[in-house]
Each structure stands twice: as C-alpha cells, then as structure tokens.
Image (cartoon, rainbow, N blue to C red):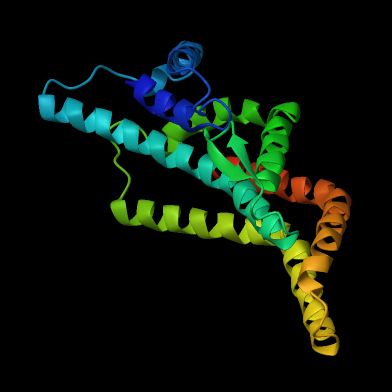
Length: 238
C-alpha cells in the first residue's frame, strides 16, 4: 500500500510530474522509489485488515496523504509561476506567450524562464534528495490508517497557497514597484506633453529597463525561491 502514497507524491513532484514526462516513465520511477524505500518503511507496513471497507480506507488515506504532501511542493513551484507573471506585467511582456513545457500550455515568457531555471536549480542543489527523507518521515507523522483531519488539511492547503502567493509577490516586488514608478512618471509626462504618445514611445524603454532589472535581481529571486522550497521540505521533517 505504500506505493499509493509514494506514487501520488512522485506524480506531483516538480519536473517528474510534468505532462511531457510519459506516464509510463513516472509509473516506473514511482515503482523504483517504492522498492528502494520498502526496507526502510518495513516497520510501518503490515498486512491490510480483512474488511473491504478498511482496505478501501487505507488506500484512500494513503492517497490523500500523498496528495497533501505533493500539493505542497506544487504550491512551492507555483510561487515561481506567479512571480514570473508579475514580472511579465511589470516589464511590458504581458502579451509575450510561448508553450510552457512544464505545463503543456501557453504561459508568459518570463514565467517560463524563471520556472525552468528554478526547477533546474532544485536538482542542481540536490534538494530533490530530501524527497526520500520526506517519504520516510511522513510515516512518522501519518502512519497507515491514520486519516488526517479534514479541517487541518483544509487549513494547511489554504496556508500553503497564501504562502506561495506571498513568496511570489516578494520575488516580483522590485518589478511591481518599478512598474508603478515608471507609469507614474509616464503619467506626469503625458500631462506635460499631451500631444506626444508617451506610452507608445516609452514601451521599448520599459522592456529594456525591465530586462536589466531582471538580470540584476535574478540571483536574488532564485535564492529566495530555493530558501522557500527548502522551508517547505523541512516542514515535513523532524
């Protein structure tokens, strides 16, 4: 039954859970991780009870726990997507959309860029190794047949979502503040010289300055994201 929890977590883990990864590959990877962790999880595993209702409850609880943990990782990655969208609106690239290979859908260009870099850094900094520790210690916090209280799960999801938006806004704060100041200056110039199409003339300048600001702040943005992702991982560790 541990495959249900581990498989659900694997299906939601960044990069592995993306649509461009074949479902068969994800399934095989989940089976490999389950086989690898089986010996460590031995003390927590025991035969399912005889009742069909209890077996169904065990499968459901394992699925919900895996979904709960995996969703928290997805929310952490969603902070990058939200920050990229705010950056795109701040630097005037709100209409520049391309196919996002992580979501198999159209996304804003800055959002695709920082999301790809962020997910690459997760593996480059070996944060994905903590996935095995999270799986191991999840059985300490949620042993088999222990169904999490629905109220606590709803509160956890709400807090994870709000924290994701908060971190995303923090990462994009320089662009939000810069765009407000830039448009305020353009508004003053439009009042001074109403015959000039100020916003049309200033759009290339907004894009150029936005790219310079992105280059200057990219390392800080990614450092904040990695710190937040590490915080999410250690939330499930003792």
